[in-house]
Image 1 (cartoon, rainbow over the protein chains, first blue to last red):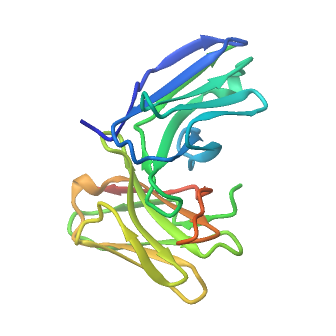
Image 2 (cartoon, rainbow over the protein chains, first blue to last red):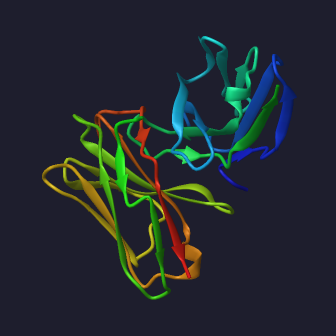
Length: 111
Length: 115
């Protein structure tokens, strides 16, 4: 079993839809959770960062962490074609530990 | 633009050869991380340097080595290349090291093709 699992997609949604992206993980020691966005052939870009359980909102993006279920989510409201990218969840045990990435979910937002 | 630069953008070489990938971190960042991204393995952490010293090691092969220089730029050396080494290699940088630095800024990557 991989440490971090993510549905690879592809996920295709119409413009304006609410998108839900999810990751599950097996290591209960993970405390720091991140979401990265990666456009084709570009470097990943940090979107959201959360510590421990709870929600965090930033504009159209909301990150949720449920440590009891070992499940994290990223919600994108009012999705735009420019949101079309691969979304990688990532996590680490401590603030200085190595980051473990999920395999990524490919998202297409259709105009 | 993240402020992290990587050269070259593309590299095509033959099996058995050796290549060097270069990374310049963002101004002020002391940590440099190297990652390998392939279609079947996803983004894999290779190694981290902090202010010139190796800080953490991931799934880095013995044929691979890295270093961080006094000016904080870093080089990743890949030797005895195999077809399976073909991948995107990313460098990332962050401000801190042991005190924690969750924000890693990624460079544009070097696409390595081994033929």
